[in-house]
Length: 317
Image (cartoon, rainbow, N blue to C red; front, side, top):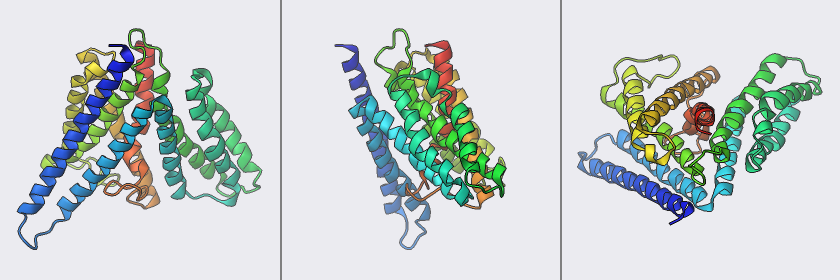
């Protein structure tokens, strides 16, 4: 059995396990709803069903991308970046003078960033946005001859491009790492990242509902609690340790790496929650029922992906 076949079978096993967990969650939600008295409030169960149904769709799309291969994975994260950037800009105050900068962001820098991943040009991938985009975009905006709140507008466009494109693209960039003894299995690193960080979000929700009493920062995120943070991060890190066989790490390395990306992911969600509160909105959008927008679902990955990429690149590649 060659490495490619082993990787393909392993990915099928992982997705089968995730679909099995979703089947169990759907079954439990259906059972809980059946046991409710007639006329009882079903809001919590309906919300759980909506979230679970959305997870079915998201996992199916992810599985399809992995089945297609590297091109499918890169295209999927490019779409995620596009949708996240669209949501970010939609709640950001912009003016006519920003239109050139936005066109550059959506139709040049975003596709160029993922093209560079596709051709494995790390040197340019790592500086395209933080150097060239950050210099060109304000220059482009000045050509709009609009100086009103210029500094604030330029910062918002650059920050959106940074979070939604540059940071998220590091998940797809894991495909480009040359890891001795791990050849042909880089897609497993993306699965590890997504499963660990996304499970942290789920476990934070569960632990917060079960034990949450002490609000972390109600003005930023009313639903996040200290108990949810500790329980969610530790449980997800334990899951990451259990998934060490998908990575080049041993068990303790997988646990420590998981702890790092889960902590960063948590505070990434916190930062984006602060931006939402500043703009006076609850969610970034309505694309995913029960979850909000795309950026609501990938906010933690946007912060954890570059950290995970550089941890792996520095110590294993």
